[in-house]
Length: 69
Image (cartoon, rainbow, N blue to C red; front, side):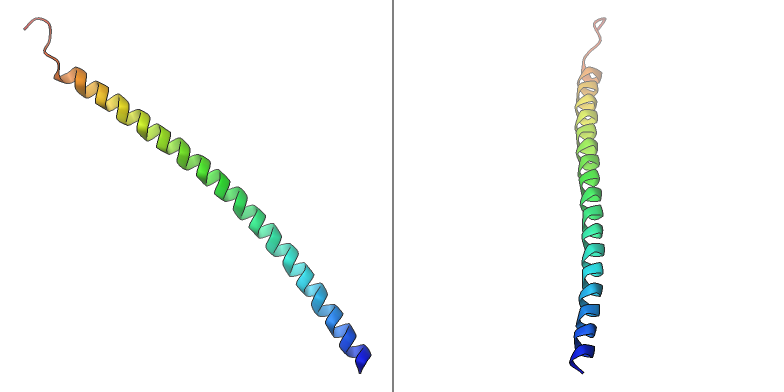
């Protein structure tokens, strides 16, 4: 009976080891995805700021009185 119990515990430990490896792989993939998403958000934020600045400059130019007036 003790031998059967020991074998059962070894099997459970092997399954837990496989599960732990799978979870580590998933967490690693998620971290890579988070890193890519952060880079994308930063790029989009920079682009929005750039467009906002360009729009402000264009608005200032549109409000100027033409020189022939």
